[in-house]
Amino acid sequence: MKNLNILITGGAGYIGSHIVEQLVNCNNNNIIIIDNLVTGFNRLINKKAKFIKADLENKKYLKKIIFDNEIDTIIHLAAYLNVSEAENNRKKYYKNNIIGTKNLLEACKNSYVNNVIFSSSCSIYGNVKGAVSENKKPNPAGYYAYTKYKGENLIKKYSKKIGYKYSILRYFNVAGASPSNKIGEIEKSHDHLFKNISIQALKKKPVVRIYGNNYKTKDGTCIRDFIHVSDLADIHIKCINYLNKKKKSITLNCGYGIGYSVQEIVNIFKKIKKNCRVVYEKKRTGDIDQVYSNIKKFNKTFKWKPKHNNIKKILLSSIKWEKKLKKNNVKS
Ligand SMILES: NC(=O)c1ccc[n+]([C@@H]2O[C@H](COP(=O)([O-])OP(=O)(O)OC[C@H]3O[C@@H](n4cnc5c(N)ncnc54)[C@H](O)[C@@H]3O)[C@@H](O)[C@H]2O)c1
Image 1: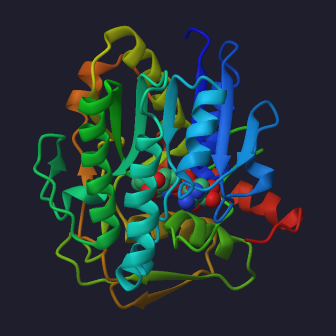
Image 2: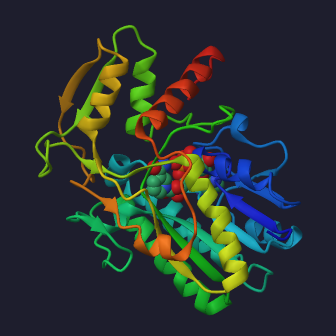
């Protein structure tokens, strides 16, 4: 990878910090993080990167940052992502995820930006049978998914206007923590399964909640495709190289292509913590029955092999990170 000036929005968050960890270790890239720290954390900010506290709502400031730092590549992660909260507070999600993205792209006009990578989500597909491929027509079921779908459309629209190339990455469910154990997920408001289980793993009497057990799936619980956060981060490096080399835009699924039910994950945990109690709660609004990735296009595009695609190890890495948070008395 040649030396680049890369701006990462949301770089103090869970996934962003893992991308930064990998970027600072390849070549002399200039990494600039912007984050308002609403769900990001100072302790996730890599010391080798430049950090600017900024909000997507401040278009003028975004423009100044992009111009002053001669940004050529943007990785746009900053967003809200709580599926249930989005249903109850659409305005908040509209403002941050849709208008925030628009502001960022407006700020790119007449700049040096020629690559934009956008964090989208598998939730834009809605309910699907079997493995879903990128050419499936989006059918966002909830409002969070809708904001991601609108975000994708903005990325495409502004690409035509401004001329940058883009990668739309549709993340499946992201889990685990860096093998360095220096970074991992801190924020717990997103209500992510692996985070919730890891918090319980440290309790004497763990209780794991499963939201819905009457979905139309093999065991009644939701099916998801879980990808380790460091593998996902690695895909971003691949994408930057792809955009610089091929100068072509691309949309890709980011998952392993394997669907695990929530019950299956909990069963793995029950082998680790034998006294774990499982409580079945009502379905959460905005959740879909099942979604897992068709990875044919991804495999055709990249010669890439995941390093962490072992579901038990992913869970163990999350738990190890949670232990560290507890030891250091970190609260979210
Ligand atoms: N975690 C997953 O499983 C998953 C799955 C699919 C897609 N995604 C997408 O990946 C991206 C990152 O998610 P994450 O899991 O790292 O969450 P996160 O909350 O840890 O990271 C988001 C970061 O964006 C920052 N942010 C939010 N709004 C901002 C604003 N207006 N201005 C500046 N900074 C702002 C937050 O402070 C936080 O640091 C999001 O766009 C999310 O929709 C995540």
